[in-house]
Amino acid sequence: MKRYGCILAEGIALVLLGFLLFRFPETSVEATRKGIRLCLDLLIPSLFPFFVLSSLMISTGLASACARPLEHLMGPLFGVGSPGAAALGLGLIGGYPVGARTIAQLVQRRECSQKEACRLSQFCNNCGPAFFIGAVGVGVFGEKKAGFLLLGANLAAALLVGIATRVTEGSLRHLYSHSVPSVSFSSLATEFPRCVRDGFSATLGVCSYVILFSVLTALTEASGLLPLCVDALSSLFPGEYTNTLCRSFFIGLMELSTGTTALAEATSSSLALPMAAFLLGWGGLSVHCQSLPFWQAAGVPMGPYLRAKFLQGILAAGITSLALLAFPLALPAMTPILPLSSPFPLRQEIDLLWGLAGISFFLSSQKRMEKTKGTSYNKHIP
Picture 1 (cartoon, one colour):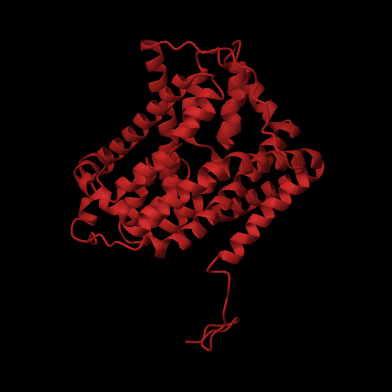
Picture 2 (cartoon, one colour):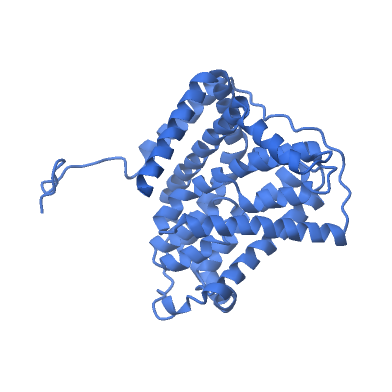
């Protein structure tokens, strides 16, 4: 009965989405354009190099070699093996969803178990320093110190979540203490072409989710659903910037970039920085959908991961609030951030993105399906 209820709910959601797309075609087109510009101007330049770097470090064995000395730290604090240090480090440097991709690669290479991957997923998939300091600290709040504060608060919150999971669920060291493979090194020249191809495909996958959630956010705004939720929550917490903070909260639950950008109108509020810390710790449904293929490849369930990310957001907001009480931070008054501009018209932007997708398809090593003598399209032949 529960299964049929889920199917019915999914069907209603799809019908509603189709109705909104036909009802607000101009809104969906403009939102698609903004999503494409965001991908071309920000996401592809920032994510692609880190995707390639993480793949090279894992494939060549460098990440495992560098992580071995950290076994004494990863074991007692988080109850996982030393390869998890590579996921933690790359996840903090590369940002969403580099940590998830690194964990999936560790599982595929059998350097950590699926239970370890589930543990790592709860604190190793985080926002990168560039987004903390550049996009949010300087771009939204006009002060790099705000970015460093948010970075420190989220790093502390992620580590606290990992330690809390170790305390409540125990150690997993028995899963790897006698089965950790020795470090094997591969040639950089051998792994480089494949890592570039895989990194490019992963980057385009992330862009597809960003464009989709840009459209979904715009449709909720145009349909009146988002203003309704904002007004309902604002009525419970009256204040000067309550409406802006609530709007940022609901948008940030779905998409991180636009949610934090909405805070530019409320930087004078004492709750603006804690709200930004929560949204950066939570990540948004768009980020979680970007990470979903990697969690499926690693066998990581979404429930514990989502609960951990929500807890990280709450802890980050609390740590930020305590830090502001101890060290008040004066922020300049900011004007709303203008949408990203692009030198290309809409048609050229769409053609460029489709061209990149086509290149990724033809470079993929899994694009061909061959029928062998022992294979049937209608039934299995042993």
